[in-house]
Amino acid sequence: MSAYMIVFAKVLDREPFLQKYAIPTAKLIQEYGGEYVVRAPGVESKEGGMFEGDSVVISKWPDKAAIEKFWNSDEYQNLKEIRQPYCQAHVMVVEEPGK
Image (cartoon, rainbow, N blue to C red):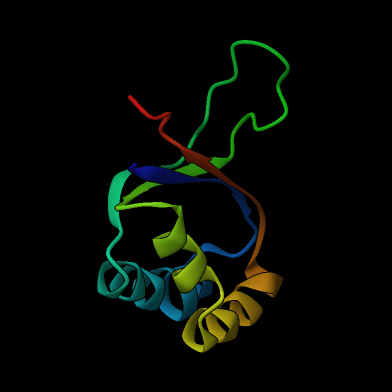
């Protein structure tokens, strides 16, 4: 089953975030079998408002195991640490239900 990683992010300092985190992470996501579905700033909340104005990133993966392999990789752990001062993130994973 395909799985999706959904990230809502409040970027605090865009230029270093893009250069030090987003660009190398995009390459790593591709290496681990993920592909971007959406990458866009300016979330508009219709109800609740929790992520109003944040950026959203949705990536599609072959399965949840591929996300876990990426998420727990040494390469991503290093990038995640780099990300911390530039961005506050909420990360969720959802798997498509079986047919």
